[in-house]
Amino acid sequence: MKVSEIGFGAWAIGGAAYAGEIPIGWGKTDDRTSIKALKKAFTLGVNFYDTADFYGLGHSEELIGKVFGNDPGVIIASKAGHKLNADDRIAIDYSYGYLIEACEKSLKRLKRETIDYYQLHVAKVKDLEKGECIRAMKDLQQTGKIRYWGISLNTYDPEPEALCSFKHQIGDGFQVVLNIINQKILPLLPEMSRKGYGIIARMPLQFGLLSGKFSAYTRFSPDDHRRERLNPQILEDAEVRLNPVRELAVKYKTEPYTFALRFILSFPEISTVIPGIRNEEQVVRNTNDLRILEPDVMKKLQDLYTNDLADFLDKIKKFG
Image (tube, rainbow, N blue to C red; front, top):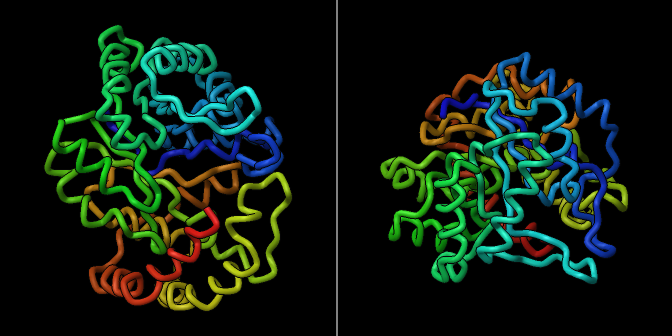
């Protein structure tokens, strides 16, 4: 599949959603605004849209289906494996029957005959070795319900599932976290590329910390999952830790969010980057001036991670 270098991360347009009392969305949204953003992205050349049945508990998929339906010019990726159990708590299910059922429901919401790229939503080695999820994906592929499939890897420890996939030749691609703050996936990228996997980079702005829009005084609404993840302690630390990144962006006359995207696109192994998008303004700014960075700048950013930001990432991890 030929995908645009910038894709559309569709978690946020799912709107406010909860697992019990825990927010699992990005706060309230306006569907009219979301629909305009989806349409604007397509007119600017974005052909790759990444969603999941858990985003807005299906609402993100419904919006994408409403806008694009079965349009063959649009490449849709979705995910399965997360659900709410009877008491509204998050549950993980990679059983054969559940994945088959989940795919059928996603196809209905997306108004499509086939999902172009279907992903196990952060499956673990134990799930892969059990084999039910792999059998489900292969059967879905054989029956034409999906074209390709892969795994969305863990945010902080992507190696176990990646190595398991290499060993058993599992799937066609990976979704990974890669940004200036989180560079844990870098040692694995060359092997992923050599083995022919497509690679989707998510969280390019680390929940917005790299956008240049937050300060130590930023606060999030109770229905936004970042309320706990990006608490005052993390925001205060980020203001100091990310100052060298801001200085580099200024030096190269680049907006912080563009600088963050350029960092990821400078790795040739990456197929597409999926910033979270909520409105037309974000579509425009995330598709502008995406030249790759010079080797000396890349080295500075990688050294900054090794010497300081890896420690900062460990602090972020404590809050989910």
